[in-house]
Length: 243
Ligand code: 6GU
Image 1 (cartoon, rainbow, N blue to C red):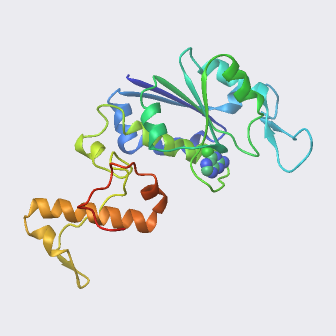
Image 2: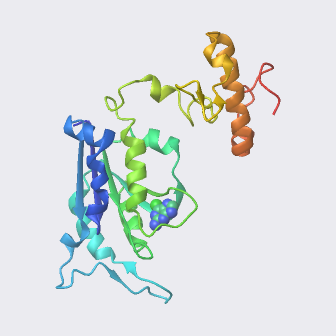
């Protein structure tokens, strides 16, 4: 396989969705070697304990570094990238997805409770591994499992051979243009008394391209003004709509 992904979690069933869709097909076709592990397999006590109370006090429980250490020592290989999904991480973007799609081996360590003892990230960084603490946005989830699903789908669809139509990788939101996508329409041409814009049925391809760019610009300015502010000086020209 071209790509190896391991996920370590106390809820392996949460990752069942990976058997479906593009990721599932890539696995069936042998492009992707994806394995999900139960962290409790590396516990040593009768109760299979993975957490304990925080030093310094405070609410909740913290995941123990010794259990994570035994798990990760076994799952990590020499060239692996270790991903720690955490709301305290850098915000995961398409740039991270593009970069991680070039890695040979990704290991996701999914924390629950108040997080994983900070020495885990520190230790594996000190061994020279690429360790990434990544958040999927500014809201709080109960654990890293759903975040890992999000990142695996974003990375997985970039793996060569996983997307049927290569054009769909080029022409998409957050792509090269740095704009949101234009609105799309299909049949029927009239639905709930709403018509598809006439121009799209006209066959005037140059005018359609112009209209789509203007709609993308208007939509981006309205919904994501910070993306317009981040465009470089060459991104807009005299033909574009005034924003
Ligand atoms: Cl990666 N984990 C958790 N628990 N909450 C999050 C998150 C990650 N990203 C956004 N919220």
